[in-house]
Length: 252
Image: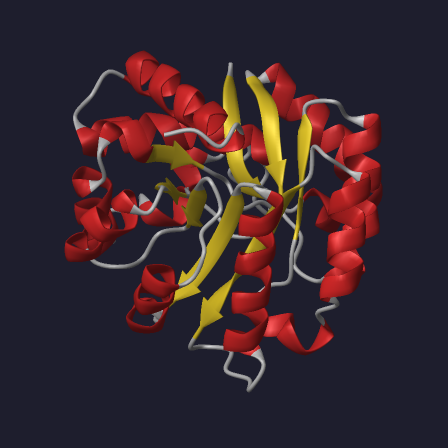
């Protein structure tokens, strides 16, 4: 059994229940369901209400920063003690003037509510790291789809970070991603699908002809990451499952 550390179940709409059923049949038994914008929050909470192995994450992706409503976020966090925060972050590929303000606001909210937080960061670690140095921090942070540098790993680890990798990291030509996978300490490593996005290579899909990523692919992604990490697949599965639980519970 294992945990998908980041995915977007609300994007599956009416096919969500079937996607979860297929994933459970492959041994995936916990799902960290991220939001992209306030438009997703109610759907994510509804899924977690009916699917007890789904952990709701409420937050605003940097691309949708202009839509953020922090008062509503705080209200929902108060009403849903099991809800975490995410995905929030910074993204140089989707610039807008609200990103940094909205990120700070959500990170401070996570710290104040003592909720674990999922962070998206693309080509913006030079901005993220200084902010993490001076802002109040939540109990734990998950850098999803980690794409920073090896030199940033110790700094982030000291600030309570876990690191997650998807199937997009295991393509044979992703040398940088492989280097990062090898460098992340085993006790801070988690694995995600980011389904329905981040399509993994064909040999990491139970249905190679499927046109979108599915949470059922997680065990095959773990197998590939185990090979890159040069560790037994079953051992890695136990480690990343334990790490995901520690992150979720706000522990290091």
